Image (cartoon, rainbow, N blue to C red; front, side, top):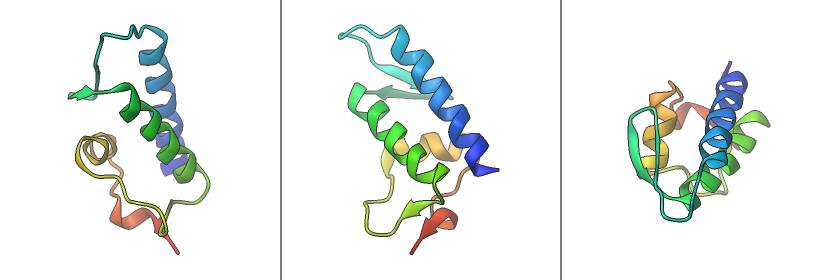
Length: 82
């Protein structure tokens, strides 16, 4: 289930990046003021999520990145792998 949601997030991020110019900020699911770096971070975390969950040795998503996952119905604490 979370793998499908992560794939949807990747698709949404890619769609936003396709229309990106270097001066724009991004907004996904009502979460605004996301930078290009935030979008790359979302893709990185989605890759982890599609491969079994967030890795314990990595920093867990926080702030607006965490808010994007929560907007898609993914809780961070329930998806940590050891």
